[in-house]
Length: 112
Image 1 (tube, helix red, strand yellow):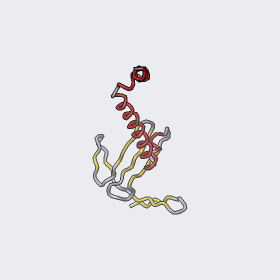
Image 2 (cartoon, one colour):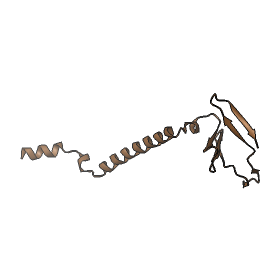
Image 3 (cartoon, helix red, strand yellow):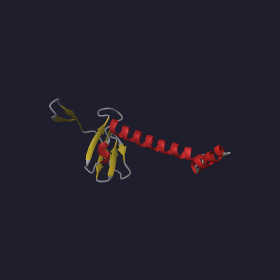
């Protein structure tokens, strides 16, 4: 009888709650998700998106699916150049030349 009484006294209220396991799993999943997002941001060098500085980035330069991404303040603009591209504001753009970066870092622009 003494053994049974000790077992009942040592038992806490958390031992009876099956939802405590689910909450622990949720915590682990949230830590994993945050770690995955941080790993993706650092892998694809997207840390500029979170800085306060303005920047311009060219994605897939010289290819058909090339994109120019600019950040001005809190606004991020994406531009996909093509021969005949219409925007919502009615402006059109076309390719006017090619820029080459040399090994020493110098950039040369060649108009078409």
